[in-house]
Image (cartoon, rainbow, N blue to C red; front, side):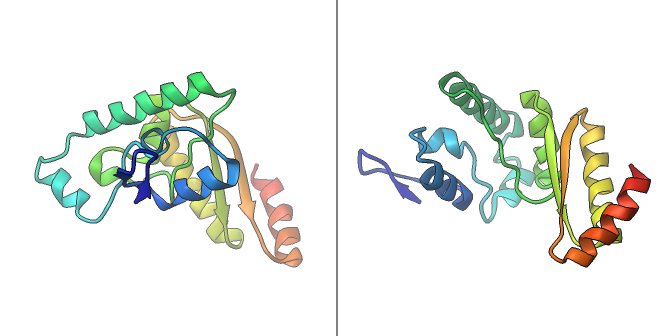
Length: 155
């Protein structure tokens, strides 16, 4: 929860607070975090209490307002591309609805990195989302050299 200038409070995703403070964004909290998938939302959705089309409309309207006010917009999707599938609003579906390309960030070693990339790419492909870039987060120089050697063979 964050406090608004009028002393009301708004429920936002915790990552939004970090981005807002780090980049000094003056965009409204409601636009920065148009929906919050909180505890119990999945059950409410499955019980028919939440409409995914209405939720997606909130995201689309917030994105439109932010896009009009700024030169570029970074839309952050938490976790893998399929997060949110159970409520018919996964990261790939949202990217597709907004007409966005995706940037995948994966970590780990050779096998796990490639497996994670392949799973995410498949979900993006299924929703028609183009990958504009992907990054492998590697922490040890020896791992980096090994992964680069084999990834150049794969791509």
